[in-house]
Image 1 (tube, helix red, strand yellow):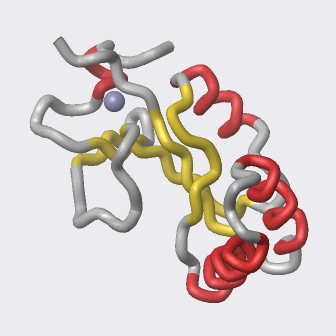
Image 2 (image 1 turned 45 degrees about the horizontal axis):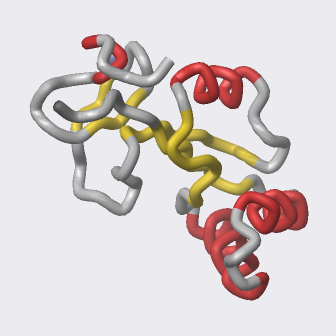
Length: 115
Ligand SMILES: [Zn+2]
């Protein structure tokens, strides 16, 4: 039996607030080198690429971030844990704005997720 699904949140950095994004990402992942964080943030706002905002979170945390996103986040995307914007196209639920893998459909619709 698999464990209920958690979620990964990704975001695009808005131009002009890169410094805030760098500070927050360094706080989220202190092991990542500052030069690497700056590279990712810069690429995100220049090329509209998504960077990780939060990993392995509960659905209630997804809703909380959506209700009050960080000032630097221009667009959010929510994925089933372990999937990312780098994957080829996977399933999408418009009702929950959730990208998911596998053939069982949206895990929020089916109720198999961590609340
Ligand atoms: Zn759904």
